[in-house]
Structure formats: C-alpha cells, structure tokens
Length: 115
Length: 114
Image (cartoon, rainbow over all chains, first blue to last red; front, top):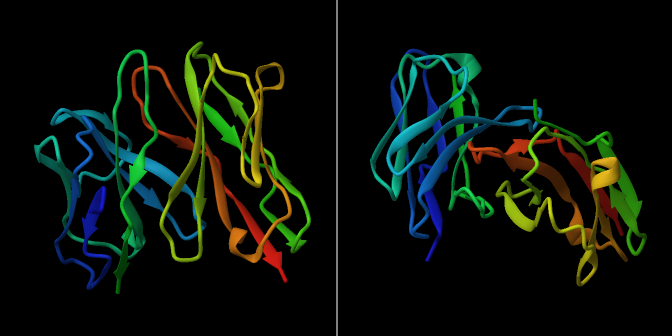
C-alpha cells in the first residue's frame, strides 16, 4: 500500500486552464503539505494543513488553492494556469507535535507542464 | 530565519570511492530536526535519516553515515564505497519551531561512475 499517493503523475495542460492534483495519505498523520520543486530542483513549501486547518500559506499566487476535506486528503487546485507554474508538485505528510516532528513522507510527485 | 546550505552543487566520483556531502544549517530554535532525503533519477523523495537537536550521536547505516556537530551547525553525510545506484540528488533539510515544514537546501547532485 502506498503511504502517500498523489494523482496524476503527469499533467500537461494549456495556459489558462484550471486543474487539480489530488493527494491522500494512509499513515494516520495529522499534517499534510504541498511542496513545489522548480526546474533547478529547489524544493519549497507552499501550504501546510494540520487536522484540516491551514497553518502555512507561503507567498503563493491566490490562483493556488488547497482543500483538505479530511485529515487524510489534501488537494491542490490551480486556476488560470501560467507557463511559470510548470514544476513538480509534491504532497507530503508527517506527524507534528510540540515534542516531536516525524519525518515527512512524500508522494511520487506530479510533473505539471503548462504549454 | 532558518536556512540550510549545501555548498556542493555537484560531485562526481568513481565507484568504490568514499564521498561526503556537506550540510550547514542556521536556526534560532533550540529544538529542531535535521533530515537527509535522496532523490534518484526516477524523481521520488526518499527519506534517509532524521536527527533531533539533542542527539549528537553519529549514526551509521550500512554504507551511510552521518556526522552531526552542533558546534559548527553541520550535519554531513558520508557514503562509503559508493555505488552507481547512489547516483542521485541529496537534500539536507531542517524543521523546527511550531510550523513543522521542511526547509530544504538546494541539493547536491552525486554522480557515481563505474
């Protein structure tokens, strides 16, 4: 069983379209994340949800909207896609607390190409 | 502010050589966690190790070893007797405070040639 699964793995779309990436974790973790990896391989946090509550919202265009229907799911919706949105998007989950932060487990990534 | 620096952008070695990947971090948190992740050419991110700020013991796992030194804010990673399958981008990361998200270094691309 895959611990963190995200779909689709590849997404090719035209500028201006709206698309979603889905993520699910079966680890029982309370915190989920979206990271973006650019063409230079740099990984940066976009959003973080803890028990369905948004706790991190980095400087990301408001065309990006995360949605967490429950603790095990964190989807990413992107409106009006632009060429610069092309990147690999990783979903991750971890167990976060005052005394401990477990390692984050990552999904396989979604390679988004905007043409 | 938290920051992770991996000064080595790319390293190329020949199989069976030992190689050390450097990681230097900055944080004002007294409790924090350090991680190494591997990203092979297939693209997934694979967790290698987690170390908390109170545990400075070095760790060895097979051919992998990690040296954590708070005095120099470093968490270096050594691969002994490297193999072609070790070729990947390796990321050092830091988390702490109340946020829990990972702050990644820019990664070191390791190429191991036969």
